[in-house]
Amino acid sequence: MLSKQNNSVIRIAAQVGLVLLVCGFVAAQDIKTNYVPGTDFSKYKTYKWVNIEGAEKPDNILDQQIRQAVDTQMASKSFTKTDDEKADLYIAYQLSITQEREWNAYSTGGMRWGGGMGTATSSTIQIGTLDLDVYDTGAQKLLWKGIATKTLNPSKDPQKNQDRLNKGVAKLLKDFPPKAK
Picture 1 (cartoon, helix red, strand yellow):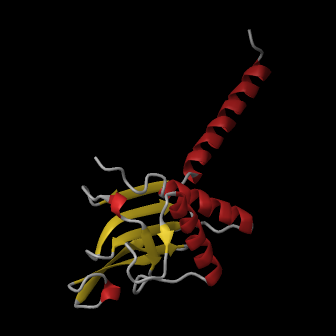
Picture 2 (picture 1 turned 60 degrees about the vertical axis):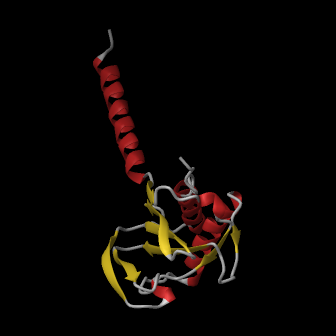
Picture 3 (picture 1 turned 135 degrees about the horizontal axis):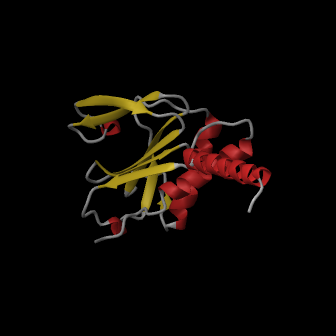
């Protein structure tokens, strides 16, 4: 039979373990993706970075880090980055270090950077969120969207920030491109 002291130690250890487990779930990145069903992603080989009109821009360091993290994942999936206007895909991102507005732009002439008449709606991006969009340049439509939360929560340690970003982007693009069904 256990003594009261041993029983208390076991109970405290169990409580501490439960708290650590819950904290681990709270800190985990949440990934959500969506894409146009029936899309043959195997026909896409190149991509070009574009900016979303009206979206907040981060500082140059964070912009470079995000693009590098995505470029690394895309290269590992045999996609080639280009500056050519004839790229197969356009990739753009939005982010929120603090709670911000997200702009979803639609246009009769295609994407907002393509011209034409258009409207824009907005929604809220939660803190630490990276929102990555992939567009078909020919059809001028959104093909794939991925959202990673708790990816950009800044800390005092730049390496920790970079590691969190790399991990989040890897998780976000883990199943990109979607497999044909």
